[in-house]
Image 1 (tube, rainbow, N blue to C red):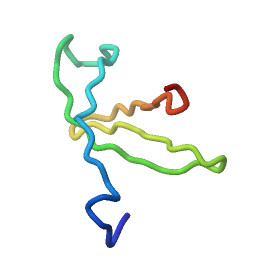
Image 2 (image 1 turned 30 degrees about the vertical axis):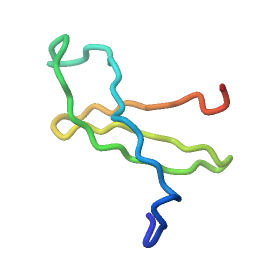
Image 3 (image 1 turned 120 degrees about the vertical axis):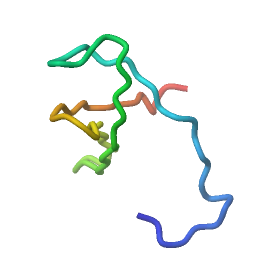
Image 4 (image 1 turned 90 degrees about the vertical axis):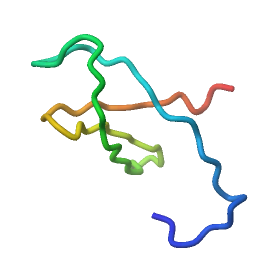
Length: 68
C-alpha cells in the first residue's frame, strides 16, 4: 500500500475483464463483481486472486509480464 506518490509514478490501467468457466449456480454470461487480492510470492512474482463479492469461489488471475 502506498502512502505517498507523485502523479508521474503511477499509471492507471483499463479495467480487467475475463471470461471464467461457469461453476456452481452461476449462469453463462453472468457478470461477477470481484475484489482482487494481491500478494508477492517468495520468488518475487505478483499473485492475484479474484474473490467474488457474493459467493465462495476464488479464481487465480495471472498475466504474462515477460512478453513484449
